Image (cartoon, rainbow, N blue to C red; front, side, top):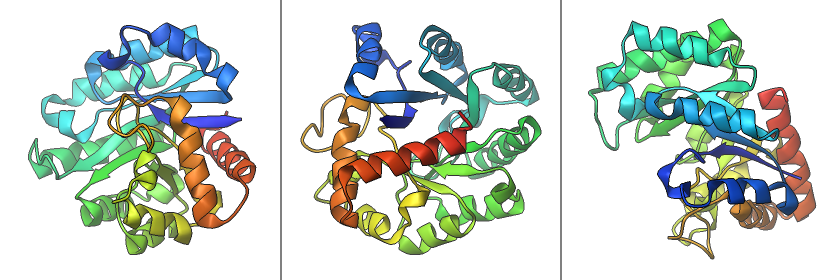
Length: 254
């Protein structure tokens, strides 16, 4: 009973065996998958997967690195896509100062506008934030994002930033990095955060956990993430699966 809160099965990395892999997930304990949008060009593929597989759901949004070509027409188009019956969130949206492209003002503008869309559509948000902790937090505060709800996807900051987001009632998305030898910061966050505010994710095909680090990731690797969380928090593995599953179901209202 595992809930995959953040996957990209529309990605080209799955072109050769996408259907075979997705069909295998329920047999391996993966009960739900949310495929998350990042660019306009792939949103229709994400919605097709949601239509095809009963256990697949969709999030629609434009990743900060892809906001350079956004305009109000894009936002109106996103609104139409968000009305699909299996869309459960707006995302992934946010700020990415690691790549720092497009410029920061453009990223901020469309992050704010997509948060407004989430509020308008009564959908929670999936937040991408990389090297942009303070600006992400400030914009979310200004948008009263605690009234909307959010997962801070692939959480990459320390415990102080985690405290800020946890105090706003958000969930932290925990993936393969927690198993890395250089993942100590995330391990400290997992130790610090209440398990009632953690969810499992892969961000596949990226960030495969140990022992498959460097290979193509898939939801089948979530067992390694859950085992690491169980070890850090000194609780049974089955308890991690149960609580994170319920967290995700509540968040996505499934």
